Image 1 (cartoon, rainbow, N blue to C red):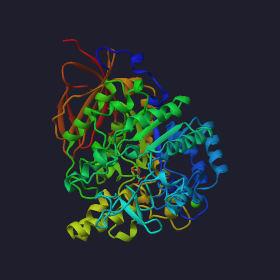
Image 2 (image 1 turned 90 degrees about the vertical axis):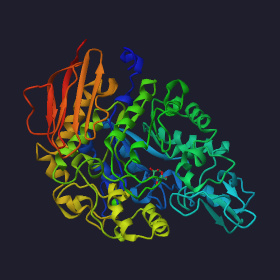
Image 3 (image 1 turned 180 degrees about the vertical axis):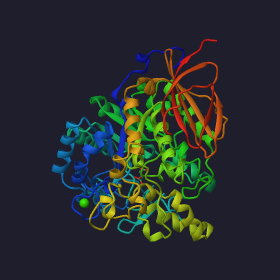
Image 4 (image 1 turned 30 degrees about the horizontal axis):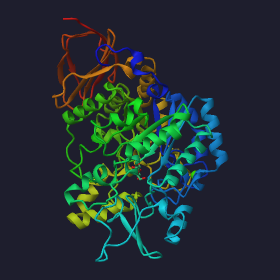
Length: 569
Ligand code: GLC
Ligand code: CA
C-alpha cells in the first residue's frame, strides 16, 4: 500500500482473497478405468479438495476436443469432451462444488479453435464461406512461400497450406489450432455468447488462455530470427486492438456478473501490466505473467535449462508488486500444466524435499496476489525420471525435439533437458495411494504415473501429521485468517542475497516477516532494526524456535514466519 493507504483503498474482493486450486482433469481421477481422468472422478474427489481449504477450482479445458493439445483445441465450446463425461456430469459437478463452497473457473481458449470445429470446416470449404473470416487466410508469396516467417509453438511454421482453397491459414500453436480472427466482430460475439452460456450454468469465471494473441500486427511483418523470441509480444500478440478487445469483452460479459477472470499474460511485462488490471480501465481482474517462468531457460528456449538465479527471481516479484501498488492485482503461481513441478524446479526434490515443498507452500501463500496452487504440489509431487521420448505425450515435446535436432543435433542434450523442462512433468496422474497406478485408474493411464507414488501420495500424507499435505492445510487456513497476507504491503528485505529470500508484509502497525533459505547451506540473517520480531508462528522444521534473536540462523531450506511490529526510529 502506498503511503498509508487503507484496506478499503484496495477494494477488497472475493477474487483477491480466494485461493485457487488448478486441476488438470485428464490426470486427476479416472472413474471408468479408461485411463483418462474424468468429471465423475473429480466429483468423487471434491471432499478432498474442500478439506484442503481452497475455495476456487480452475479446470483445464473440458470442452469437446480431438485432443491434439489436450483440450486446448476445442471442437465444440458448448459440450463436454466425451472422455470427460456429459453435460449432466458437469451440472452435477457445479452443484456438488457449490455445496462445498467451491467456485469453478473454466479455461476459455479464445485465440484459436480446433480445425475440427464446425466453423473451421465451413471456413475451409470456400473463400466465400460466411465463416471464412473467422480465421486468418493468406495467399503464398510470389515465390510460393509461406506468407511470412512466423514460427509456430508446435510446428515449424505458423502457416499451413490448405489444398482446397489454395491458401494458408494461421496457427500460432499446432496445425490443428487455427487462430480465430478477432478482427471479425462475429467471432467476438461468438466468444461472448459462449461465456454467457457457461456463466449461466453457474460457474464463477474464466482463465483466459493465451489471450495476449487476440490482437496481432495485421501487417504480418517478417521478424528477424533474433526477434522470434519476442514475437509473442511484438508481432503475434499484444497488438494495436488488444485493450479495445478486452474492454469490449468486459462490457459485454464481465460487467454483467460477479465473476473472476485471470488472463494468461505470456509476454506481458510488469510495466504495461497495470493496463490490463487497473479496475478503472475495465479489462481483466488479474493476469499471470511468465517472467519467472523463463529465468532458468536459455534465451528463447523452452526446453534448455540454465541456472536459476534467486536475485533475478526476487527482482521480478518486486517489479510485479508495483502493479498492485498502482491499483491493479496479480496472480501468484510457481507452476501449472505448462511447466515442470515446482518442487524440482524451484525447490529440492532430493534430501530436503519435505522442507523445500513446505518452503514453497509458504512462498505461494504469503505473497501479495491471488495464489494459484497446482494439483499434486500439496503432496510434493516432483518431475519424472523418464529417459526416453516414448514416455512423453505432449505435442510440444515432439515438435521441440524436431526443432532441436535440426538446430543443435543432439538428442542426448534434448532428453536430458526434458526431465527438467517438459510440460508432461507436471501432467502425470494425481497420486492418491499406494495401489495400482497410485489409485488414479485400474486401467492403463494415458501417461505414466511418477514411480515415486509409493512414497508420495495422499493416503500416506493424510496419516502423517508432519506431511507436506498437512502443512498446506495449515498454511491455507493461516492465509484465510490473515488479511495482511492478502492486502498488506510487500517489501523484499534483502534483494541481493543469492540464497535467502526475506520479505515483510505490513498493514497498519502490524507486520509479518517471512524468512526463506532457498539453499542447502545454513545461512545467517540479521533482522533490520525497523522491525521488532515478536514470535515465530510457523516453521517448516520440527518445533518452533522459542527464543527470538535479531540474528537468525537458517538451516537448509528452512522457512519461518514471524509476527512482528514496526519500530519507529
Ligand atoms: C496456453 C496453455 C497451453 C496450451 C496453449 C495453446 O499456453 O496454457 O497449455 O498449449 O495455450 O492453447
Ligand atoms: Ca475415465
